[in-house]
Image (tube, rainbow, N blue to C red; front, side):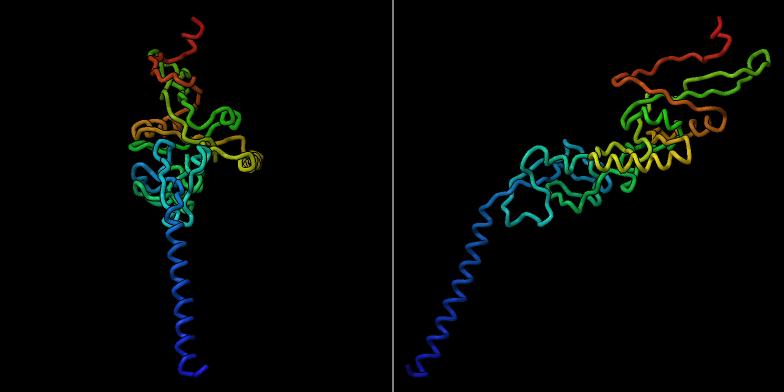
Length: 250
């Protein structure tokens, strides 16, 4: 074969190979765009460090070619658990794909502030570890204050008043209600048991108004504060009289 014919033939074959590769690549992209995946997205803007609730997310169908590499996908309702009660590391705009790197677990590392309702304050109070063991995040409690009061006759007498009612518990120790798996829960208990070896107290994190936070801080400096647990569903604020020994034995 003449050299003048061989070179154009080689170039033609090379061009054909390149063209076939391009066509194959475009075909693969087209097929990928036809494959639909369901990904999790927020139905409204989610703020940074906000605790994500189930009613704030949904799944939407997206061509797989446009699914982010680390996006959380949906197959069954169990997949919502990967997002529910997680904390947003950054703001996640409405409709954006939720990636595993944009959320973190609800934990002390994520910060208690993510659980504090707007216009409320997180008040940390020490309680007996046995009492703390009977209380769970999202329970409601009342706060009692026992102190020495000066009566009308000038005598001093200990009295107990119901200082605050129907107070939401945000967390108990390191438990913020994050829904731990068995391994994580065991690890947390182990850490708390180690801490309990050095102290008989634990902590409750309470959601208080700024005004109530001031009064509770004052009460702690004036007497003994007690925490009593309320029944679920009982949101009534009762009119409570001051308890005294005189009334007790009448």
